[in-house]
Amino acid sequence: MNTNSNNWLEWLKETRYSEIDSQNMQNTNNWLDSTRNIVLNNSKIKKNDVVIDIGTGTGFLGIKILEKMSGAGKVIFADNDEECLNECKKNINNKKINTGYEIIKTDCTDIKISSNSIDKAVMRSVLVHIDNKEKALQEIYRILKPEGIFTAFEPVLYYNTRLSELIKDKENKNLEKLKRIESVVWNDDKESLFNYNYESLSNLLKNAGFSHYNIQKIKTETQCILNEKYIDSWMELKPAPYKKSLKERFLYLIDNKEYDEIINDIKSITHEKPFITNSYFALISAKK
Ligand SMILES: C[S@@+](CC[C@H](N)C(=O)[O-])C[C@H]1O[C@@H](n2cnc3c(N)ncnc32)[C@H](O)[C@@H]1O
View (tube, protein in one colour):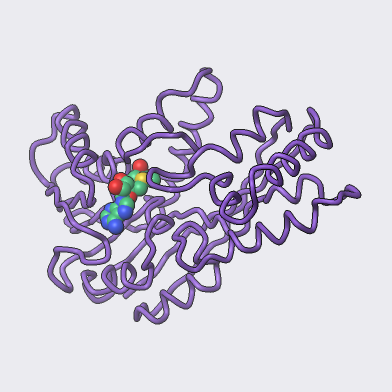
């Protein structure tokens, strides 16, 4: 989900609550609920567990867990963004819950929690934003008790439909150039959004020390109509706060004239065509 918000709180609010039409909003909510259920159903949380929701944002996973545990155990809401944590606190208060939780401001690559102290760690859509995934997973391993369980649901953008796929069946002079640009963008090791795939995630879990781990590959298909507005949004909206749009990334590699030529060409070829885009996700289950 893309917007042009500049901070996490605005971004989370915009992507969740400001859809223009109610059908879109319903679809977004259904999707979010289903991803939360996947994490909660796989995390094997029991009463009296100490659970940490890492990168909790406004408390999307953690508050549901807190409600389910109804005072037996503890939920730690962790994030490095103060504004999100303030909103999270408000959301907890709105549920009239006063005990059984702690809120901590901490970076997930240096978690301010003692080793071997957590029964279950959960995460949703956070690792994708972390440059140093190796360190984050080492930290999660460190804070878990022996046999503690880590469950996460993360997008794996590396495999998602790319622009070149919209025109791959056509004779097109820009197709090879476009694929070359995409290859540079998608293979940027320093970019958190693209610097991992299913295989590297597996290796990172193994190297962090997890004794058992499994990555379930999840693919979703979305129907769309390839009109000008859709393609402009695809290119111009930022995938996360503080991140560059695809257009900005392309313009590091080609000039404006070349960019316009490629995009206008795609728009004319795909004009109002129905299309299915693919998005990929990883359901991570790992045991210390
Ligand atoms: C896409 S939001 C997901 C929020 C929440 N997990 C949910 O599912 O609604 C990403 C969250 O990760 C947090 N985050 C990003 N980088 C972080 C870091 N290095 N350490 C801790 N939290 C981080 C952001 O502040 C934001 O709240």
